[in-house]
Amino acid sequence: MIIHKPKIESKEDKIRISSYIEIETKKEFSNTLWYEFDKEYEKYISKSLNGFLSAMIMFAMYLNEDIKVKGKISPKLAYGLKELQGYFNFWYPKKFNKIEIISEGYEVKKENPKGVMCTFSGGADAFYTLWKHLPRNEPNPHNQITHCLIIDGFAVPRSEKMNKSYEIIKESYQKLISKLGLKFVFVKTNLADFYHRRIPPASIDGPVLSVVPQLLDKLISRFHIPSCLSYSQILPRGSNAITNQLLSTEELSITIHGSDKSRAEKILEIIKWPETYNHLRVCWDDFGVSNCCECEKCIRTMIVLKTAGVLNKCKTFPKPLTRKKIRDWKLYETYNFWFAEENLKYARKKRRKDIIFDIKYAVLKNKMLNYYNKKSYLIWLPSAYLKRRSKLYRKFVKVIKNKINYK
Image (cartoon, rainbow, N blue to C red; front, side, top):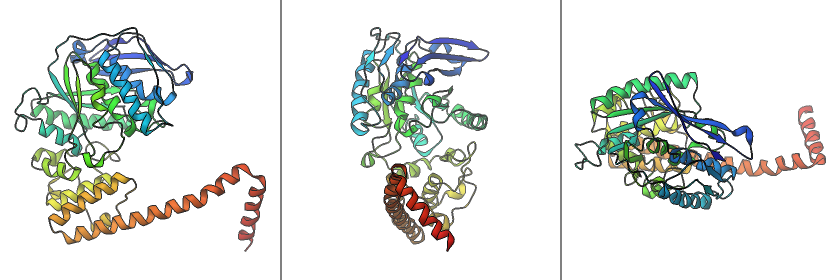
């Protein structure tokens, strides 16, 4: 993989920085990676390739290609990325290979930036990180958030529908962020074109989120990524307490925030802030700032809000939470059951016997379904293998099916 020198182009009220990413083993994957900012950030954009290196590190590991950087990079970042590779290769040895990073040398920037940035999706984790770094909660001015970041196109490829949704989100959150006296940094990118359907966003979100503050290294000195799991729920995800700090440079400190709290505890903290009632957005299935009130993320959030007695105040959850919805709550992954346990713990504290019963019902139901699905898969797997390998077995299956159809 070759990361070519960046180009900066100005168009109307936008500024775009790009780099051609040349894939050597799979030429068809080669493409120009770009990031687009509002024009006001032109003077802060770096010509360093640190950001593009962070954007491509996981993709290069996935392709098992060494990276050749056509420029100088941060020595601290170069060292950190070696450690980062060791972490992800340990957990996913078949998916992420260790590679070499070959640059044209090293360079330590001396920009002395002052800004503090956090990613802001409008979800519970993001609101919690923002809330805890406002002056009323964080007395140290060096830690107070100055810029909130939202990126269009880093997880899912940009489309007309997604563009409209992000414009609604941008308009809604712009008012909130401005009211707080902060800057709202809205960035567009085509990064998802490289990763989509190849690597899940949850496996790469730490490195790819770090790109923007690295591109704005003349402005941002600290970057907080909200944690989605607590310290007791550590999984080898793309954003975690171990590897996020390895993406730091000499002048940019990258951290994860909020791992000392459970998701339920974060929600209970942010509902003290009335602004969340009109802006809390946890759903990936719905359009704009509203929530579908049907998906796993919506249900888990609504349970806490209802138990706390504030669900009716939250305008972004327009549909009621019925007992049937809780019982039909879909729990697929390990962390889904962790969130259910958090909600159950809080329901017990509030002595909500109805919610306690419904959560227990949903957990038991999903455990039974997951067990059945695993057993069904183990039964199906040998048959699928034999169908691919044995003509005799395919004939046997055909005979059996014909007999069943005949009856």
